[in-house]
Image (cartoon, rainbow, N blue to C red; front, side, top):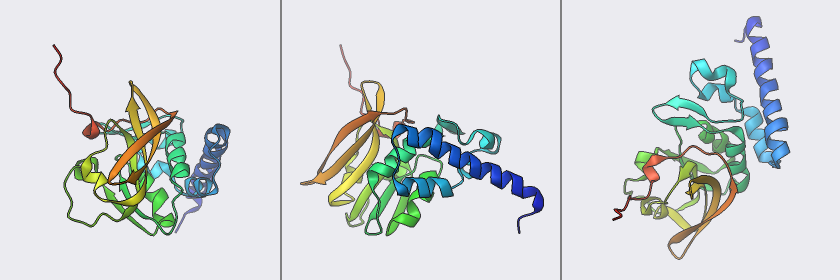
Length: 202
């Protein structure tokens, strides 16, 4: 049961979520109802280290330790808006380390499987029937281990590293392949597990 002493903190957190939506998402054109509902309901402060709870709603990524980050609200709001998740979706999420995106997605899709970047690189014997793939971070390449897990015409929402910049990117699986289209430039945490192999130059 919530104590009287807890009420001001809860009210303050709710006000911070509303301010995040009004001053970071809306002004950037991220206005989808599903984004406002989910990001207004999920407390970001529960997904950061104890010492960072007071800055959970700032407009930049928050270090989580071990090289992982909670992306800025605009990043995850933009990804959720572009994904257009629905109860018909069988969703696969590559978690960036916080668990926050999973909590945003879980109630609005038919099913959700969450894997770490390391797990995403492992071959799977499961049938390729996911209709939505979200990667909570920026990648240099999309591994075949993920492409094979997608149904035909599956949607992909991720970040992509292009010429040293990170951008939101969308794709679809067509004829067994996924092509990613870079969109808006966004400062996104990079997932090193999805780096392209480095080639030698002479």
